Amino acid sequence: MEIITSISIWIIPSFILVILVMAAVRKIPAYDLFVEGGKEGVKTAFSLLPFLVGMIVAISILRSSGAMEAFVQLISPILSVFGIPSEVLPLALIRPISGTAALGMTTELISTYGPDSFIGRIASVMQGSTDTTLYIITVYFGAIGIKKIRYALKVGLLADLIAILSTIVLVKIMFG
Image (cartoon, rainbow, N blue to C red; front, side):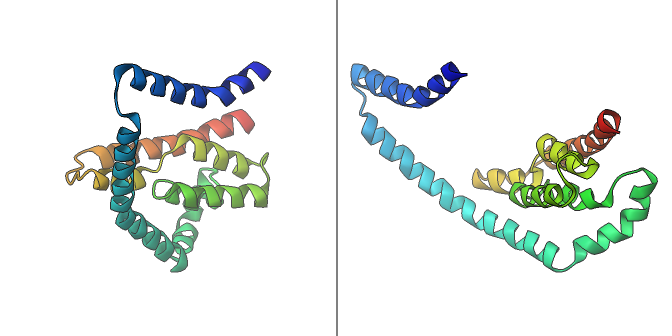
């Protein structure tokens, strides 16, 4: 374990040193290229800002309006037939939209029900096995100017649905 810790401490400074040595050997202006890369990074960050604000506003409206809770109450009888706790439904709905909001919900579920509870296990596995599909399409596709998303949204949401259902089945099989 100490070897891995030592490697992890020295890997990034070593990588930077190798880049600087290679740039010196090849007589490439490393600092100038670094500054140009930094400028591109700032431009990218500013181009992402409108998409991030839009996502944050949409999530806030969804949570504050009570629409999420109303939908959970509406669908909870169907979920109980299949043995799915309705407490994890908001997490399943918000996870494709926002990773941060989903992480907050997961933390809340685990602190409320415990990490070893059925709900805590489902929340943990769901958090790790799904992705922020709508966030990725909105922010990253928007940042590079992709307007026609073709099948990306359908496939991403289908993958999320399969991951959510697989999570519930696997947690039931493994932990009862």
